[in-house]
Length: 203
Image (cartoon, rainbow, N blue to C red; front, side, top):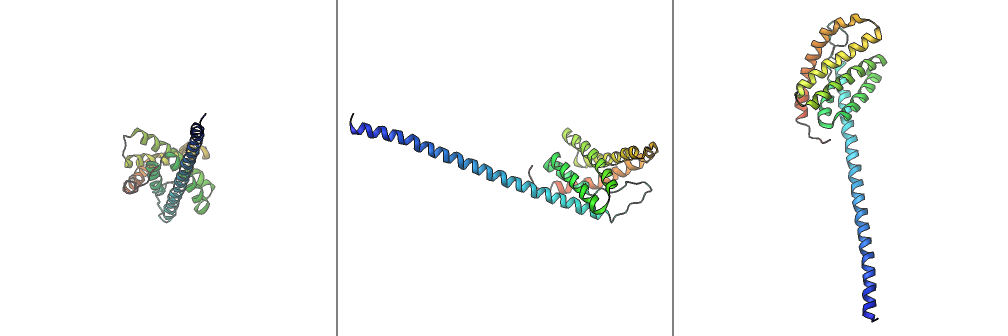
């Protein structure tokens, strides 16, 4: 066998190994870039969620200075629901639930008590369930979803009161709570619409 044929075979053996090394480097670089992108996305999600939680806390605090006395407990504007609606439409139900839960727990610790937290949780979970279902139907506007959420929030609290007090007479408050929930839903819905169309964030 000639020297030229031997050298050709050696080069042929070396070339695949070089190609394999290049392919491995490309794969590693691709994985590193994906990991970096995922890390940036996770950090962004955490930051955005934190901002919305802070906003919800601010609205909850502001609401403590707006007393509404109609002779029926549980009547309020529900300003924090503005944030919930925006998050629900912009970031999805999972993030909306997270923001609501953290906001309720922190608000109860700072401005209320365990009873307030239980009623808030009951109202928020029923409200979120109803709003999520209506959003999936894609038939109602943001304002319409807000109104339904406001009424559902009050009804959730009313049912919990009936269970905790073991008294069905609290259902007499239902008409007032439905009306107040509708009014609150209109107010928060209008504000949520204005904010939703001005906030540019991705899920």
